[in-house]
Image 1 (tube, one colour):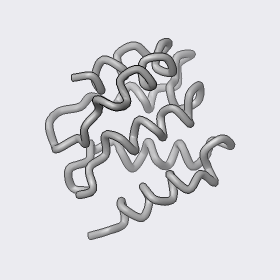
Image 2 (image 1 turned 90 degrees about the vertical axis):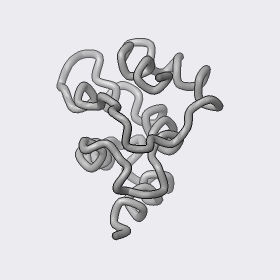
Image 3 (image 1 turned 120 degrees about the vertical axis):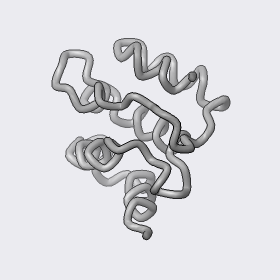
Image 4 (image 1 turned 180 degrees about the vertical axis):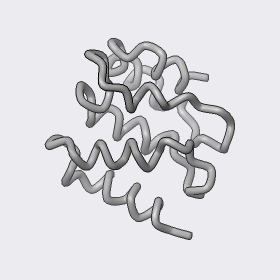
Length: 101
């Protein structure tokens, strides 16, 4: 999928996401590999491109929180630690969706 491609090329993530954004659809429970977002490497997307990642997550995270990838909560936690995104209303909106049961 386009989302997988963007995540597979972390050093180009900030260029890929704007190019594919209009074609991204919400994740529906299919397998999406997001573990690499939680690594502490030089190409860490959360640290290097937090605002782009937030835009990406807004596009791919389904309204139904139960369709989200397992790593989503940890990724949102890490975005909440980044100065660029900690007070972003988009993060707050995703957090509210995350809390809905």
